Image (cartoon, rainbow, N blue to C red; front, side):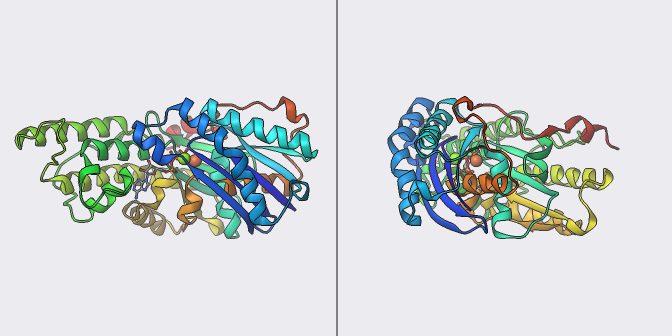
Length: 370
Ligand code: ATP
Ligand code: FE
Ligand code: MG
């Protein structure tokens, strides 16, 4: 079996062909990250145009590298939810066109589900397992019980950690820091934090008194903003200058530590909940950690301390599979195909869905469970 996967939900145009054993036969990716950096964020119309400009080359590139023609694949999978409407539209329309042209089955894929399933491509991870997704656009804890069968334990009530790391980095003017010029905001904070004092500033861990798995980062961001404003004022630095406060490393470290404590508390809660409700069997304790933010080693080590304590195995896909890509969509399609499910009866009728939570919402039960 071979599946061609297409991803366009956000800011990468990705395509790949995978086989049923998890081998990647061919892959192509076009990232819009640098363009969006110049705009200070993703402008949907700009993203849509870039997907439109690149989708054909990306899909052809994946097929070429695999040495295959469209006729050789068993099915075509594409991200149909959730994501930016204008972006999803391009991938879904293109996939439908290929489906019509080739007569191949169409498998609509849930982007977050694909992130979660990617870990099963490299390792023999059995259902059910715990999933922690930390990215620029998402933050969630879920249980993967099967293909298309997820329990959502909690998710962010406001912003996602990746964007908040990026925004704090911007507020700290890290673009102008000699050690950070080529790094993403999140990477810049991680690098500076390694030589900072994480206890230098007392920041409040979000929602610490709520025993659920929901997240909040907006308050933490604002508190960090206020700290930066205060320090700039003390040092006589105008907010619109390129000058960076002297305690930048300490601020980065304190910000990162507090955000991480929030993540640790939520993971702790999720593990206890699964234990209490007997959701994950003793012999199968696995946490899959993915998303761009999961490449932060401080965060990873901290979460590992929690999983170690409860005897969970921690699985992190390699960084290139943690961020958005075509491989994860192809593999998710393959998971459906192997089970003989998930094929759209009427491909033409498939519509993209900008919003679509992952699985059954368990947040109330998480809060109520002792
Ligand atoms: P999605 O659409 O899946 O939400 P995204 O494209 O917004 O994804 P990713 O590509 O998964 O996000 O990851 C990018 C984000 O990860 C950025 O916000 C970036 O700052 C953050 N990031 C990358 N490396 C690190 C790091 N070392 N520490 C913290 N954050 C990081
Ligand atoms: Fe993603
Ligand atoms: Mg992305």
